[in-house]
Amino acid sequence: MSKSVLLIEDDTQMQSFIIEYLKEYEFECKGFADPKEALKDFEKNSLEYDIVILDLMLPNMDGFDLFKRVKKIRDIPVIISSARGDIGNKIHGFELGADDYLAKPYEPRELVLRINSILRKNSSNSLKIGDFEINKANHEVKLDNYPIEFTKIEFEIFIFLIENLNKVSSREQILHATSLDENTKNRTIDMHISNIRYKIGDEAKESKYIKSVWGIGYKFVG
Image 1 (cartoon, rainbow, N blue to C red):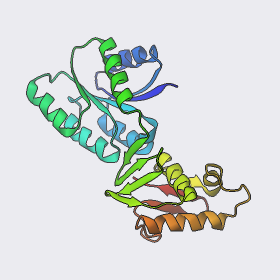
Image 2 (image 1 turned 180 degrees about the horizontal axis):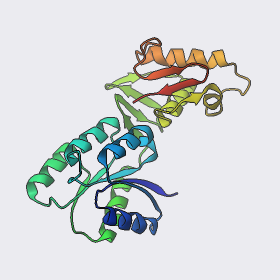
Image 3 (image 1 turned 60 degrees about the horizontal axis):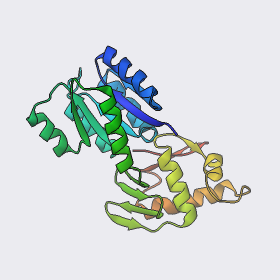
Protein backbone atom coordinates (compact mmCIF):
# COMPACT_ATOMS: atom_id res chain seq x y z
CA MET A 1 0.00 0.00 0.00
CA SER A 2 1.45 3.36 -1.05
CA LYS A 3 2.04 6.13 1.45
CA SER A 4 0.96 9.70 0.87
CA VAL A 5 3.33 12.66 1.23
CA LEU A 6 2.49 16.37 1.39
CA LEU A 7 5.44 18.34 0.00
CA ILE A 8 5.59 22.10 0.64
CA GLU A 9 8.47 23.42 -1.45
CA ASP A 10 8.54 26.71 -3.39
CA ASP A 11 11.40 25.66 -5.68
CA THR A 12 9.19 24.16 -8.37
CA GLN A 13 12.07 22.39 -10.10
CA MET A 14 13.10 20.68 -6.88
CA GLN A 15 9.45 20.00 -6.04
CA SER A 16 8.91 18.18 -9.36
CA PHE A 17 12.13 16.22 -8.93
CA ILE A 18 11.18 15.03 -5.41
CA ILE A 19 7.65 14.08 -6.50
CA GLU A 20 8.97 11.98 -9.39
CA TYR A 21 11.72 10.44 -7.26
CA LEU A 22 9.31 9.43 -4.49
CA LYS A 23 7.01 7.81 -7.07
CA GLU A 24 9.83 5.35 -7.83
CA TYR A 25 9.56 4.21 -4.20
CA GLU A 26 5.76 3.93 -4.31
CA PHE A 27 4.97 7.19 -2.52
CA GLU A 28 2.06 9.34 -3.64
CA CYS A 29 3.32 12.90 -3.33
CA LYS A 30 1.33 16.11 -3.70
CA GLY A 31 3.33 19.32 -3.95
CA PHE A 32 2.59 22.96 -3.16
CA ALA A 33 4.72 26.06 -3.68
CA ASP A 34 2.28 28.38 -1.90
CA PRO A 35 2.06 27.65 1.85
CA LYS A 36 -1.44 29.10 2.08
CA GLU A 37 -2.70 26.72 -0.61
CA ALA A 38 -0.93 23.84 1.13
CA LEU A 39 -2.59 24.74 4.43
CA LYS A 40 -6.01 24.99 2.78
CA ASP A 41 -5.54 21.51 1.30
CA PHE A 42 -4.30 20.08 4.59
CA GLU A 43 -7.30 21.47 6.48
CA LYS A 44 -9.60 19.53 4.15
CA ASN A 45 -7.54 16.39 3.61
CA SER A 46 -5.23 16.01 6.61
CA LEU A 47 -6.06 12.35 7.18
CA GLU A 48 -5.12 11.45 3.62
CA TYR A 49 -1.46 12.20 4.32
CA ASP A 50 1.08 10.08 6.17
CA ILE A 51 3.88 12.62 6.41
CA VAL A 52 4.75 16.26 5.54
CA ILE A 53 8.01 17.49 4.00
CA LEU A 54 8.29 21.18 4.74
CA ASP A 55 10.65 23.85 3.43
CA LEU A 56 11.24 26.81 5.74
CA MET A 57 11.99 29.57 3.23
CA LEU A 58 8.53 30.08 1.73
CA PRO A 59 6.66 33.03 0.21
CA ASN A 60 3.91 34.73 2.25
CA MET A 61 4.51 32.67 5.40
CA ASP A 62 7.47 31.62 7.53
CA GLY A 63 8.05 27.88 7.49
CA PHE A 64 8.05 27.61 11.28
CA ASP A 65 4.69 29.39 11.46
CA LEU A 66 3.32 26.98 8.87
CA PHE A 67 4.76 24.08 10.85
CA LYS A 68 2.82 25.15 13.95
CA ARG A 69 -0.42 25.58 12.01
CA VAL A 70 -0.07 22.14 10.41
CA LYS A 71 0.57 20.51 13.79
CA LYS A 72 -2.46 22.27 15.27
CA ILE A 73 -4.70 20.66 12.66
CA ARG A 74 -3.18 17.20 13.10
CA ASP A 75 -0.16 15.78 14.89
CA ILE A 76 1.37 14.37 11.71
CA PRO A 77 5.06 13.46 11.21
CA VAL A 78 7.02 16.36 9.66
CA ILE A 79 10.45 16.43 8.04
CA ILE A 80 11.89 19.93 7.71
CA SER A 81 13.81 20.28 4.43
CA SER A 82 15.67 23.58 4.31
CA ALA A 83 18.74 25.49 3.22
CA ARG A 84 18.76 26.90 6.76
CA GLY A 85 21.21 24.31 7.97
CA ASP A 86 22.58 26.17 10.99
CA ILE A 87 22.30 24.63 14.44
CA GLY A 88 19.93 27.34 15.71
CA ASN A 89 17.25 26.54 13.14
CA LYS A 90 17.72 22.82 13.65
CA ILE A 91 17.28 23.15 17.41
CA HIS A 92 14.19 25.32 16.96
CA GLY A 93 12.72 22.81 14.53
CA PHE A 94 13.20 19.90 16.90
CA GLU A 95 11.89 21.95 19.83
CA LEU A 96 8.67 22.54 17.88
CA GLY A 97 8.31 18.80 17.32
CA ALA A 98 9.93 18.09 13.94
CA ASP A 99 10.60 14.39 13.38
CA ASP A 100 13.68 15.09 11.28
CA TYR A 101 15.64 17.97 9.74
CA LEU A 102 17.39 17.66 6.39
CA ALA A 103 19.73 20.51 5.43
CA LYS A 104 19.86 21.19 1.68
CA PRO A 105 21.44 19.99 -0.46
CA TYR A 106 20.91 16.31 0.30
CA GLU A 107 20.71 13.05 -1.61
CA PRO A 108 17.06 12.16 -2.43
CA ARG A 109 17.73 8.56 -1.42
CA GLU A 110 18.46 9.85 2.09
CA LEU A 111 15.03 11.51 2.13
CA VAL A 112 13.39 8.18 1.25
CA LEU A 113 15.28 6.39 4.01
CA ARG A 114 14.31 9.00 6.59
CA ILE A 115 10.65 8.95 5.53
CA ASN A 116 10.54 5.17 5.85
CA SER A 117 12.25 5.29 9.24
CA ILE A 118 9.74 7.82 10.60
CA LEU A 119 6.73 5.98 9.21
CA ARG A 120 7.90 2.72 10.80
CA LYS A 121 8.07 4.48 14.17
CA ASN A 122 4.61 5.98 13.67
CA SER A 123 2.88 2.88 12.33
CA SER A 124 0.75 2.36 15.46
CA ASN A 125 -3.00 2.83 15.55
CA SER A 126 -2.71 6.02 17.57
CA LEU A 127 -3.99 9.35 16.22
CA LYS A 128 -4.13 12.84 17.62
CA ILE A 129 -6.78 15.00 15.96
CA GLY A 130 -7.36 18.40 17.54
CA ASP A 131 -8.44 17.88 21.16
CA PHE A 132 -8.76 14.10 20.73
CA GLU A 133 -6.30 11.24 21.22
CA ILE A 134 -7.46 8.01 19.61
CA ASN A 135 -6.20 4.45 19.77
CA LYS A 136 -8.14 2.49 17.16
CA ALA A 137 -6.72 -0.89 18.18
CA ASN A 138 -7.88 -0.52 21.80
CA HIS A 139 -11.08 1.44 21.01
CA GLU A 140 -9.87 4.26 23.23
CA VAL A 141 -10.72 7.94 22.85
CA LYS A 142 -9.49 10.74 25.10
CA LEU A 143 -10.61 14.35 25.06
CA ASP A 144 -8.04 16.64 26.70
CA ASN A 145 -6.62 13.48 28.37
CA TYR A 146 -10.06 12.54 29.75
CA PRO A 147 -11.25 9.07 28.61
CA ILE A 148 -14.55 8.92 26.71
CA GLU A 149 -16.61 5.76 27.13
CA PHE A 150 -18.17 5.00 23.74
CA THR A 151 -20.26 1.97 22.87
CA LYS A 152 -19.01 -0.14 19.94
CA ILE A 153 -21.38 1.57 17.48
CA GLU A 154 -20.61 5.05 18.82
CA PHE A 155 -16.89 4.38 18.42
CA GLU A 156 -17.39 3.17 14.84
CA ILE A 157 -19.40 6.28 13.95
CA PHE A 158 -16.91 8.57 15.69
CA ILE A 159 -13.95 7.02 13.84
CA PHE A 160 -15.76 7.23 10.50
CA LEU A 161 -16.49 10.93 11.00
CA ILE A 162 -12.91 11.60 12.17
CA GLU A 163 -11.50 9.80 9.13
CA ASN A 164 -13.67 12.01 6.93
CA LEU A 165 -12.66 15.20 8.70
CA ASN A 166 -14.34 18.34 7.30
CA LYS A 167 -16.29 16.25 4.77
CA VAL A 168 -20.06 15.83 4.83
CA SER A 169 -21.16 12.22 5.43
CA SER A 170 -24.69 11.09 4.72
CA ARG A 171 -26.57 8.90 7.16
CA GLU A 172 -26.36 6.09 4.59
CA GLN A 173 -22.57 6.39 4.44
CA ILE A 174 -22.38 6.36 8.23
CA LEU A 175 -24.63 3.30 8.34
CA HIS A 176 -22.52 1.32 5.85
CA ALA A 177 -19.32 2.19 7.72
CA THR A 178 -20.57 0.55 10.93
CA SER A 179 -21.79 -2.85 12.07
CA LEU A 180 -25.37 -1.58 12.33
CA ASP A 181 -28.07 -3.56 10.54
CA GLU A 182 -28.62 -2.21 7.02
CA ASN A 183 -32.31 -1.71 7.82
CA THR A 184 -31.47 0.73 10.59
CA LYS A 185 -33.56 3.91 10.42
CA ASN A 186 -32.11 7.40 10.08
CA ARG A 187 -33.43 8.34 13.51
CA THR A 188 -31.27 5.61 15.03
CA ILE A 189 -28.17 7.19 13.47
CA ASP A 190 -29.34 10.55 14.82
CA MET A 191 -29.71 9.02 18.29
CA HIS A 192 -26.15 7.67 18.21
CA ILE A 193 -24.84 11.05 17.04
CA SER A 194 -26.74 12.69 19.90
CA ASN A 195 -25.12 10.29 22.39
CA ILE A 196 -21.65 10.97 20.96
CA ARG A 197 -22.21 14.71 21.22
CA TYR A 198 -23.32 14.37 24.82
CA LYS A 199 -20.23 12.36 25.74
CA ILE A 200 -17.80 14.83 24.16
CA GLY A 201 -19.61 17.89 25.51
CA ASP A 202 -20.86 19.04 22.12
CA GLU A 203 -24.04 21.03 21.56
CA ALA A 204 -26.22 20.41 18.50
CA LYS A 205 -27.14 24.10 18.13
CA GLU A 206 -23.62 25.46 18.72
CA SER A 207 -21.53 22.47 17.75
CA LYS A 208 -17.75 22.62 18.07
CA TYR A 209 -17.06 19.19 16.63
CA ILE A 210 -19.99 17.47 14.88
CA LYS A 211 -21.97 19.74 12.57
CA SER A 212 -25.42 18.84 11.24
CA VAL A 213 -25.81 19.40 7.50
CA TRP A 214 -29.48 19.90 6.78
CA GLY A 215 -30.99 17.24 4.53
CA ILE A 216 -27.72 15.31 4.18
CA GLY A 217 -26.05 14.18 7.40
CA TYR A 218 -23.08 15.23 9.50
CA LYS A 219 -19.46 16.31 9.35
CA PHE A 220 -16.70 16.41 11.95
CA VAL A 221 -14.85 19.71 11.86
CA GLY A 222 -11.30 20.26 12.97
